Length: 169
Image (cartoon, rainbow, N blue to C red):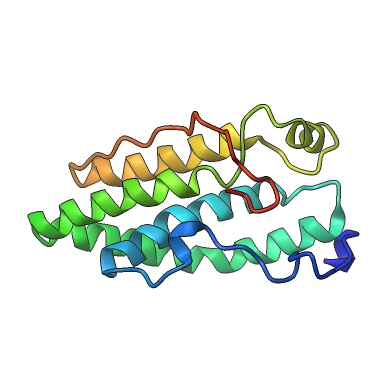
């Protein structure tokens, strides 16, 4: 964090704050696969938007992270296909878990009109805003599911009351 100009403190910056879906043990393998698809998809898409950041240490780390994330994506996509082809109950549970996970994880990038995010785009710190991150992940997931003749409606969050930008939820 210090390399990015942020000093660690006792205010939780170094402890992290998981999404609510990750605060407890995931209930089944479908929830694990959904988390791998949705949460990793959102975070990786955000990281991709920083690979050419005007903050060079951030850009360097982003490029390194993206090199490693390919294996996660291949793994998640393979499990999605396996569960969609495994039978109606596996398929329906996976679709339910994807929708549930999306409901929480899609809030992580924040509201589309957040002034800090707009400033980060204008300064070249990130390449795209929250709505673009959500759209790219939604399009990727929808394409994967369509290839398996499956569908989940993944809506953008609309109620930002109570959203905490420090907790990202």
